[in-house]
Length: 159
Image 1: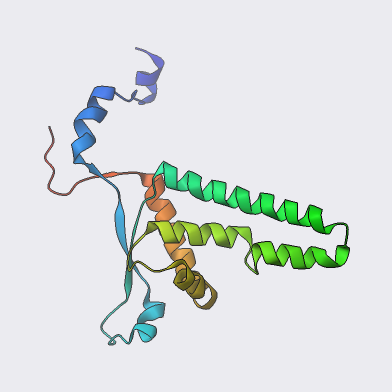
Image 2: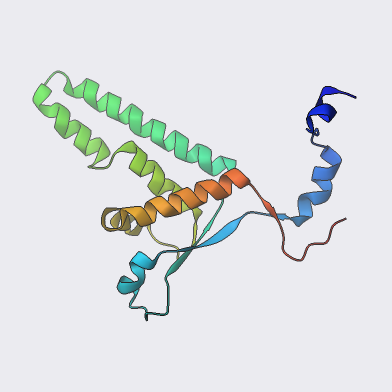
């Protein structure tokens, strides 16, 4: 018995992955956002929802690169402004606006992971200011879906 068998771990088999390929789909989830019921003009028995999906590796990396670019721009702005200390805050604000990098990253994740409604970046930023926990909840759900990875399609039979 080899070490993997004794621990209950099984090595991934390429053949099994290939056979499952047509039965896998990105995870999606309906997320309730009752905080937006009044804004949407919903009846008391209705609840607003947003449909989100998992992200792909390329999307995660785009967000990471974007965050790194923000950081590089911030450093460059500070270096340029160091000669005149009074301009440091202005340079930082011009580059970053009033939003910290983590908030930008969360907005990027929500923007990429939101299926329906498809809101503009400006709308998501607006919601993040007035309904910060809605954006936080959506971010968390998208990250959870991404962590779980694809799921088997409904009504798919085993091969």
